[in-house]
Length: 78
Image (cartoon, rainbow, N blue to C red; front, side, top):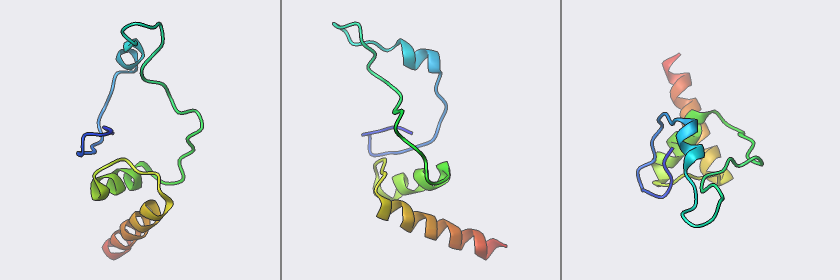
């Protein structure tokens, strides 16, 4: 997912490319993994919430509302 561009989307990244991005003056990486993030929903819920709100969100009310909406859609199609 892209952050801060107003157009959240799922896609693929090369981990080696991400790891190679360095600060221009300091020997530190610019992109690091959030080791404290623990997903409570499927990626599809996070992606749909990001599309609805135009930014990546972890706000419980956004995710719960999106989860409920996705669940209704799935149940209708069964």
